[in-house]
Structure formats: C-alpha cells, structure tokens
Image (cartoon, rainbow, N blue to C red; front, side):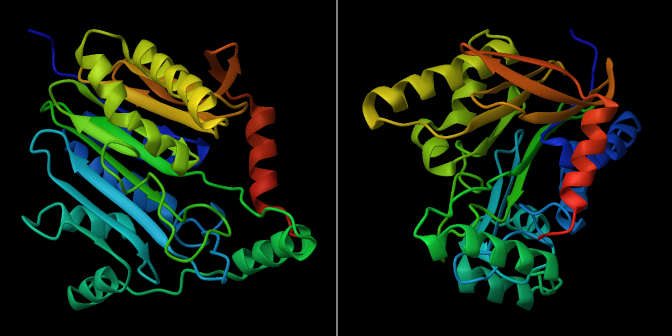
Amino acid sequence: MNKPTWGIIATWRMAFDGIAAASQQLQCEVNAEAAVVQAIKMVEDYPFYKSVGFGGLPNEKGIVELDAAFMHGTTMAIGAVASVRDIANPILLAQRLSQERFNSFMVGEGAIEWAIANGFEQKNMLTERAKQHYAKKYRETISQGLSPYSGHDTVGIAAVDLQGDICVGTSTSGLFMKRPGRVGDSPVSGSGYYADSDIGAATATGLGEDLMKGCISYEIVRRMGEGMSPQQAAQSTVNDLEARLLKRYGRAGDLSVVCISKDGEFGAATNIENFSFSVATAAHEPAIYVCTCDNGETTYERASQEWLDAYQARITAPIV
C-alpha cells in the first residue's frame, strides 16, 4: 500500500503564494478542499491579477462577470457559478453550491440573488485599473475594427491530501471583452476541471471555446486512470485535441493544462509559449515553472529571478 502523500498544483504564476501557503497546510493534514479554496481565494483577492476576481477584466459593456467551480473527487460533488457580478469570492459560492443536492450550478441573476440571500460578501469587482485596461483595449481594437479577444488566464488548482481526498477548483473573469453572458470552460465539469480521488485531477486554462470541444480535464484524468503518467496524459490529450481541432475546425486556440495523481506526481502541457504553473508536493518544494512547447512536447524549467522580476513589473506597470 502506498504511503499517504500530499500535493498541490495550479495554472500560472499568480497562484504561487496560495500554493506555498497551502503546502504548509497540507503537511499539517488540512484537507484538500480547504487548501484549494483558500489558495484560489488568495488569487481572487489580489487586484493586479487581471483575469480573476477583484480586478478581473470586464466584458464588452465594461461589466465584470465571474465564473468559478469546485469539485470533490471523493464524493463527486460539484458546485459552479457563471456570469456572477459583484460577489467578492466566486470560489466560496461554488464550494457552497457543491454541498447542495440540487441547483448546484447557477448562473447570472439567479446565482447573484442566491448568494446575497445566503450572506456572501458583495463587492464592486471593477477596479480603476481594470477600467484603464478596458479603455486601452477599446482604443487599440474595437475603435479600429479589430478583434478585442485576448486574455483568458483561469486560475485552476488541484490538490491531494494526506487522507487521500482530491479536490479541484477554478476561478476566472473569462475572455476579456467577451459578450455579456459568455461562459467558457472554467465552470464546466470535465472541461475546465475534473477530479477523481481514485485517480487524480486536472484543470485547464486557455480558450474555453476550444477546451470545451475536447472535455480536456476529464480526458486527462481518464488517461491517467488507464495507466498513463500525469505528464503523458496531459501532453497526449493536448496534442490530440489540437490536432483534431486543426483538422476538423480549422483552427486551435490556446490549450494549457496541469494535473496531479493520487500519488502526488504531476504533469503540465501546453501549445503556447510561456505558460507557467505553480506546484508543491511532499517531494517537491513550492516552485514556479515556465513551459516551452516545441513540436508537441512541453518542457519546463524553474522560473529565473529575472523572469519573476519582469512578471511583477509587468502586472503592476502603469497603463498608458
């Protein structure tokens, strides 16, 4: 019988502080659910992460609409919200909905009304900085007749705890300049996330419209269940979906994933340059990795101090 272990992995550098804090909790037998939710909440609360939570980028009408989801891989409980406005932490709402037998995926006004009635914190999620990003993007694209669609960096976090439970969660403000009501893969089970405590968990970030076409997170977990390592499952799933999209649909957007097995092994794959992820396990200190994709193979190395300094400077730089 394998010795109990722990681990946590997330999309993007923005999750690192939450991952580092969660690593300390998981060592002390805090459960995966609490670790995932608190780590995502930290990302939601930081105003300089412009694709999640407070400070998230608005839709084409200048309104911040947020999506989030949570799944418990032991009970298979799922909670999700989409197109919610002015609720401080969508991940807390998704977690709470995962405890409901019915109505566990709520959207728009219904989700907002339920959140308020149940005491969830209300907050204006549109920051002055996000308004500046919106105005800049409008000048550079819509006012010139160009496509405005860019920016879709979902935070997805998956963890396994010492009790053997595996959980996964997501949170995002979605595609920048999206149409009101647009929903991507992040709150959709099997696409933006999936967890099975007998196997592992996966979560995705990128262009939701394309990630959903392959139910990519479920497929990664399924392949791990058939014996693939996390890295093999992640890479083969990304490659296969990209190839099918190009052949049948004629184009393929950004596809990036991370996953973790019940044994604490992890994997990451992408079809873009400079995808980053954060990870910590019982055998691996908290670290940030930067990925490179070359001919369908993802390699990654620890982020250099230069890369980290440039990242911080970029996300906090004045908007001109």
